[in-house]
Length: 92
Image (spheres, rainbow, N blue to C red):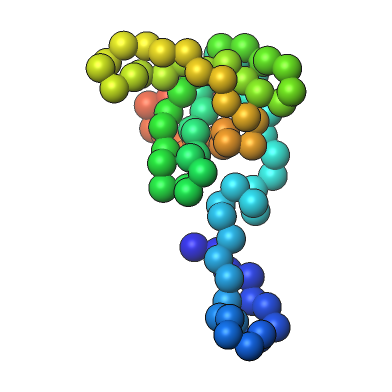
C-alpha cells in the first residue's frame, strides 16, 4: 500500500494510507476498452467493458452480473482504472 507520512497529532497515527485511486493519474477510457471498477472501499474490483460516455463524467459499462447475465451500469470516471497488462491481450 502507499503511505503518506504526516505530522503527529494527539490521538492519531503518524501514517495515513492512501487509496490507489488517489495517486493514479486520471484515465478516460474510450468505448470498447476494458476497464477495472474499484468500489468505494477499494476491496471490490470488477472487470468491465466501456460501452459509451454519458454526461457528468460518467460512463455506461457492461459487466457480468451475479446470475451470469450481461448487465449495463453507469459508473463515475473516478471509479474506473486501467487494467493491469495481460499476456493474452493483443496490442492495439
